[in-house]
View 1 (tube, rainbow, N blue to C red):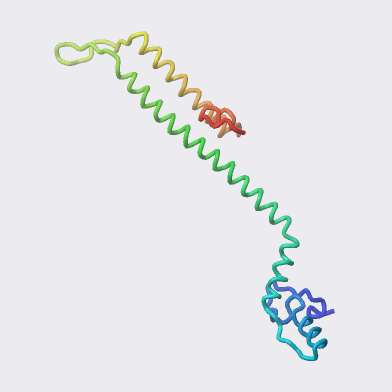
View 2 (view 1 turned 30 degrees about the vertical axis):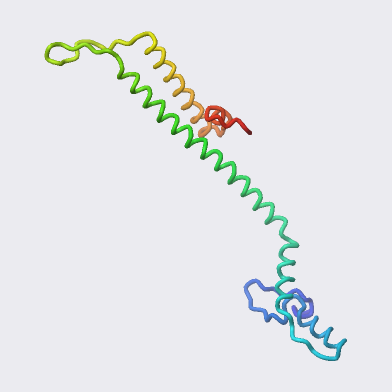
Length: 162
């Protein structure tokens, strides 16, 4: 049985005349025999049949495309969370540096520092709290990137949905 007889020519890698694609030549011959004339093949029907043939076996391709789309959504969500935590870490670091430089210094007559800075109880509590927040954020980021556990990072960034 030849390709033309089977009605299913192979179009991958070889040129096939449009008259042979998906039975168009047969359709023209059959309709022509019934009416007594031979009609020209209709190329748009051949293309529609080719599309239908590919779609009929597209299940695995559709599954792969859906999986890829869902993976892309999760990757974008994770990327957004990492960028968010990096911005928050930068802000907290800046806030901590500002708090650490707010201590009272003592100087001698020549302008040299004579002792270590002194802080109030509130300033020390504020710096401790900032250090704890930074440590918590860095821990969540490390856990997400190293052990692929993103839940803590999502919680810290405020994106709690699963």
